[in-house]
Image 1 (cartoon, rainbow, N blue to C red):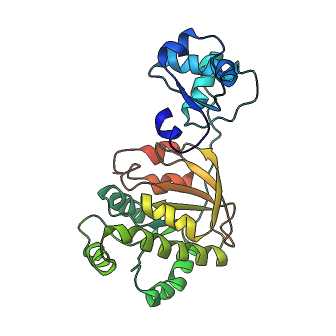
Image 2 (cartoon, rainbow, N blue to C red):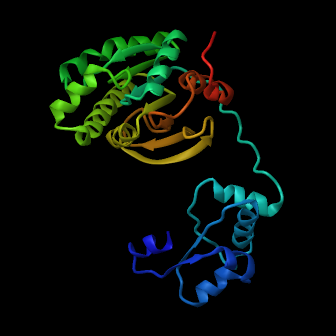
Image 3 (spheres, rainbow, N blue to C red):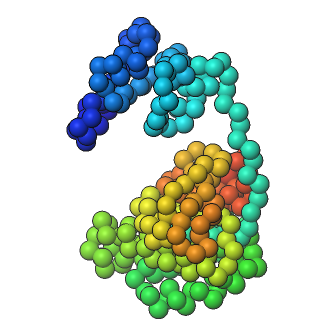
Length: 276
């Protein structure tokens, strides 16, 4: 990783291997004295995690740290305790689900949410007239129910997916087009209705939908479910700024993820079995 990052900058970057992690005193101070501007720490078990946390806590100067939740766990391990649980986010409605995913998992989540009272609407990302026609029914569904789902495909065998890919010239162009269309739906709905929570399904879809609403940055709220944390978005689009958002890959989440997002309930969001 240090070698990979070093090819992207003229600044000196070094890696701290496992031997140095446990043996070298003040490795960050030594690296700084040698002219190193960034250092990569890694580990593979609880002991190396705690060792990395101690290095961060004992640093001689303020640090800018980039990392996953492993950074929090490393610091907590070095302090001898587990990180405190995040506060429960609580329920919010209505929830708007925007799905450009064709995965079987998302298909299952859409079906479960429909049974729980969510309204579902199909969107053809190539049909601007149909996109505009969706405005009234979608806003009405958001006003009267727990939430609404706008989807472009239901599972990998949906004929609409084949037609869209063929019209756009291949899967490489599908993600940007679908994401932009769902982003327009998002911006339109948020400008006319209060939508406290939004779920965007599909990796490429989420990226391009966020671009379409002018996403600026995100703040964490709650882990909620593995791979699909609840976050707060700062955005330029009217009505979107401050929205609580879940951005999830197609195969991520249990069958009741959308219901769990609405309830702010991690137990429901991660439950694997279908409701009886």
